Amino acid sequence: MRERGASDRRHRRRLTGQRLWRRVRRYTNAADLLDVVLLGLAIGLAINATSVSAVVTAILGTLYLVVLVLKLSLTFRTRKAVDRLHGEVLWGLFDLFNEQLFGNDCYVRFTLFRVDPLDASFIVPWYRYERGGSDAISDAERSFARYAKGEGFTGKAWQESGNNQFSLAVIDRKFSSRGDFERYYSQELRIDEELVKHLSEYMEHVGVILSAGFCDARGKFLGVVSIDLQWTSDSASDDGREDDEGEEVDEIAFVAPDGEVRTLDFEKFATVAISLHNVLRSLAESERR
Image (cartoon, rainbow, N blue to C red):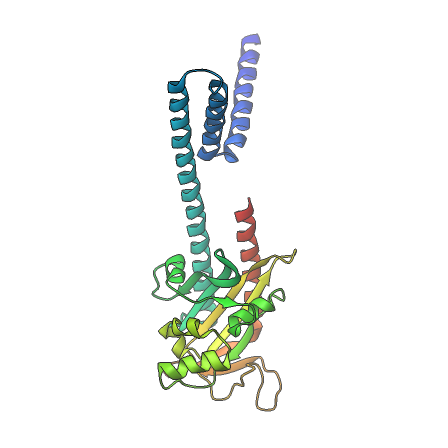
């Protein structure tokens, strides 16, 4: 009985040790091990600095640089993997919204704009989804678009971010040429002329834009989601949700390039906005950890 009791205690200690080690491994990774190695090398350099051994100092310095490069490489790869994961999450979410709201329409494009890391006075495409696209990051990086606060519909959504609700804008005209398109966007929408020159051909056919700026509970900006639809309407006003008598409506009918009539149900977009806000908030929290 004593031997069995001792065996049980050893087994329990082993399980307890495994549980503690598992908890440590849950919150550590290879980069943390490299930090320990760097610390050890730094201590070695500091100690050896008072000695006369130049060879040992050179060896330790070289090892320090090698480990530092490895750590930076590992950190970059980890962040890239997280970025890819977030892109896949949003791609799947936008694909679901396209199915539920637009019936898998190929004339719809979703873009998440975030603050430009090179210039915080602008937002740029960070993730983008459209049917037939390659992936959320590559499609976004191909764009030259960037907007200041209040510039165009996207910039206006940034300026008004925090209400976490979609606003509708209707471009009630067809452009006869690229020049006509550029003049409208620069003169009517007050978008920088150089930017307009680099807007994609896709935007030439966009007649409906839904945009929303999102912030978390602390007021931290999470991004602007813009939904660009290549639909047209002869009945919707420029303010979007108003009929001919100026009264707000819950649904508006549009015509897609294939001639089919599409309907926007604004009640559904309230639920979409809530879902997007929750997902963007969760992604932002995961980036801070």
